[in-house]
Amino acid sequence: MEITVSAPEPDYPAAAFDAAFAAIARVHGLMSWHDAGSDVGRINRAASGHWLSIDPWTGEVLRTAQMLFARSGGLFDVTCERHLRRAGVLPDAPSDGPERSGGMADLTLDAKGGRVRLRRPLSVNLDGIAKGYAVDRAVAVLEDHGVAGGCVNAGGDLRLFGVAEQEIGLRNPRRPAQILSLGRCRNRAVATTGGYFLDPGLALASAVIDPSSGRAVALPGSVTVTAPRCMHADALTKIAALQRPDDDGLVESLFHELQATAHLFPTVGVEADHGDSASRQ
Image (cartoon, rainbow, N blue to C red; front, side, top):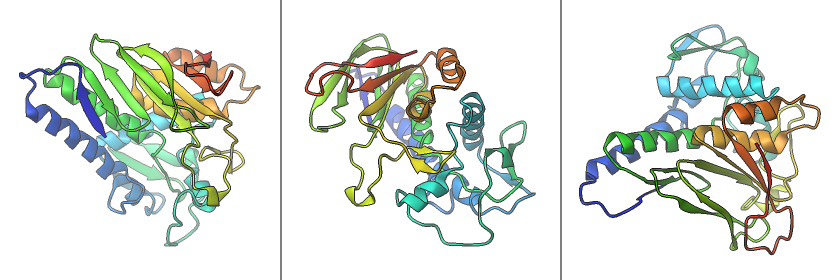
């Protein structure tokens, strides 16, 4: 994670950066799939039929995940992490009871988002949305501390804030050392999904899983989404990658509502040093 400001300002308090990184660390501590003590780890061991207390931040992310699942026709599904484990993208989890095969319909949040209940045992992975949420939280903290503008960059997920425009560079999906330009943006979040650094030993098309089949989808390039909030941009990259021709306008309507745009790279010459893209808004 990297935090930069748009200009060297002696008035920016060091406490602003400490608080922003603390917010990022809090999101990680709550939503890490690898940490058994996190909210995610506790959900993934929880029995069905009982309320489990969770942090309101986790509740906010889960409620957004539920909304995206419903509005995308099931394309964004945080309960399909078992497919990532079977594919080797995630390490296998130890067995501690019945198979956790429940889905999004089996996850209930209370009205305040501070408790969750499972109708059937299930497991969740928030990696496709929580990093963007951490970026948004860090930006909010910086603004609360009077930081006028800058960028929070989580390596593929970033958000610009303030009045100054900044250049956005994207890795060439086929030659990751080469940088393509997306153009100049301000007050905008950017997230990218691609198969840049997948372990070749996994023989996977990508790390994006189709929830309906449990199989990885082929990504010949990369998908970048821009939106006002990084949490939305992060999740929408998976929806854009999985969009079906017969979705009856569900994805287009969702992108319009969230003021998001998808850019597909490459669509023209892969050697181009500019942002050739097919945009969908």
